[in-house]
Image 1 (cartoon, rainbow, N blue to C red):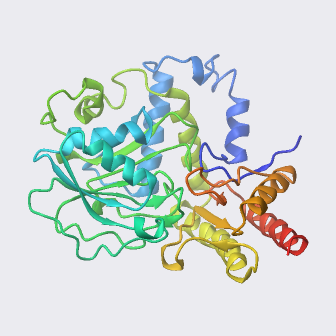
Image 2 (image 1 turned 120 degrees about the horizontal axis):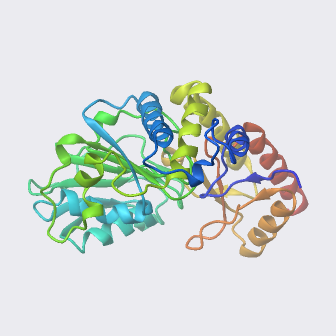
Length: 360
């Protein structure tokens, strides 16, 4: 069977070139006589892999020297707890609720202190990003937290909130490396890699050094102290070795593609094809207010559940897989991450057009 166009929100499709390279190195990585999967994380060979991955990521994102890069386990969901554990000195923080993952992070923070809802778009099923220019931030808040791109609802911040001098913590799982960002605007920026960067099993966190201290909440596990991980260069225990190796290959691929400026252009072009079709379609409609649209995740509906199900079924048969929307919202969702080629989006739109003609 030939490869399908995989529109999954994560684990998501990887660049074919990267998969082929990994396949060629599966039994023997660069003459070491072993696979990266079976290699000691303390070996010189692996040390070179993780260091090179970090170096390439720093170049791609232009990460300043006073920020640490950590490769961690546990997914973004475990990191939801690490944020308050490491940062909640006054036991108070502000959260902006723009979807499921921001809400989960907010609920997690409530275990450790007072999490304050600063703004929310729940009133319109998270279909927009609220105005964050004048939030009710108080002096005693330790940080302000956002989920920058909302995978489920397909929204993305176009302007970062005014945090009134407080540390900004951002979950960028779904838009990781899709466009350039100014790392200096954040205290902590992190993401699970299984959407836009690599296979599941790793979170990459970029943390300003002054925020990495021994002053953490009592009861914080050794493994969840950022200082433990930073002092050991992400090698305190066995890291997700193979996932980091693939991420490193994706970083090389991104550099070869022209870096993040080039990716942004490529992603805007792809998203425009799909949004332009949705905007003129009589059958399908996008669910997000245009000003808040994500370049990565595009949810849409027909307005009829049976027709939605029929579309998903026929699309799958035609080689467009994982288009079913998240169980909490229904409908459809096309995740068009970096690795999705432009022809995948063009062909999807052709298929949608054909489906519309046959079903209207």
